[in-house]
Length: 165
Ligand SMILES: Cc1cc2nc3c(=O)[nH]c(=O)nc-3n(C[C@H](O)[C@H](O)[C@H](O)COP(=O)(O)O)c2cc1C
View 1 (cartoon, rainbow, N blue to C red):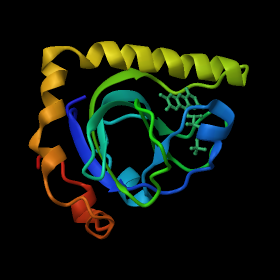
View 2 (cartoon, helix red, strand yellow; view 1 turned 120 degrees about the horizontal axis):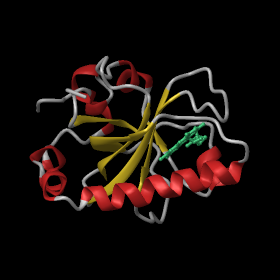
View 3 (cartoon, rainbow, N blue to C red; view 1 turned 90 degrees about the horizontal axis):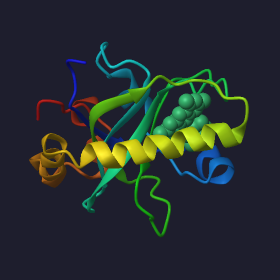
View 4 (cartoon, rainbow, N blue to C red; view 1 turned 180 degrees about the vertical axis):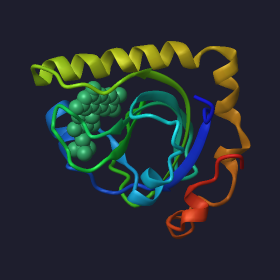
């Protein structure tokens, strides 16, 4: 995928709320403005990369892009699971991410447990891959320390789409 690494940021909006409750794996949803601006060669599927909430630390992340076939969503979403335990929800804060690699296509599963184990293997794969020097260097990219982290700045299309920053 030519567009990787892909940098973007946006305000965290509410999803269906199943991430924490049903799966035990909280996910942060991006608004439509960010989803709609994804480059054409960034296919639906599961990705790994780095993420930071507001001006916080940069953590490893996994992201699902698409329609969640297990749940048959009718709306395309971009959901990030930040691999870190947060004390509180961060709806309304700005999430900055860089997607660096692709893991697998989205698929449906026979059970919720099977979906949960697939996500847990994605997390393990992401942790290993991101320790490679070529990916580790993106953790300290200037993108994560730049100033446009306020929700108002991130809601404009220009500010949420800043690849090639
Ligand atoms: C790493 C990762 C992999 C995922 N893989 C799939 C998948 O293969 N199929 C699927 O239907 N949903 C997949 N999901 C999406 C979950 O179903 C979704 O996060 C859950 O429905 C919560 O959504 P909500 O926050 O909008 O409620 C994945 C999510 C993550 C974070």
